Image (cartoon, rainbow, N blue to C red; front, side, top):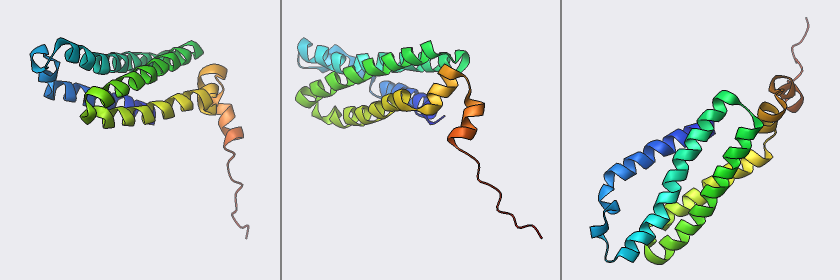
Length: 148
């Protein structure tokens, strides 16, 4: 559930930042066409992949298949790769944006690890036995009530 809070919250924040900084996407605000192209290369793939990730994650909620989990993993991998590229571009040409890239790298890496390592993800989407597995993975404590 936290993944979806972050996903949908991230989409809202991205839309808000885009609306507040719409002038950043106007070529006339850059010293050169090359600088504008570098800015777009640093920002647009991440924005596009954020919306693709949101669509795939939303689809995953309804279909709950292992194929959709794998697709989501690939989208997150692509997002991670473009975030590394964008952060490298930012470090050289737009240092004020590096902090956003680093935060994105950290959260994307954590979610990627989660989708590859989580027992819950495997049981819910691959084995479809979460109800039974939860008792094995998280056994309930025996009752400690005293009999009088």
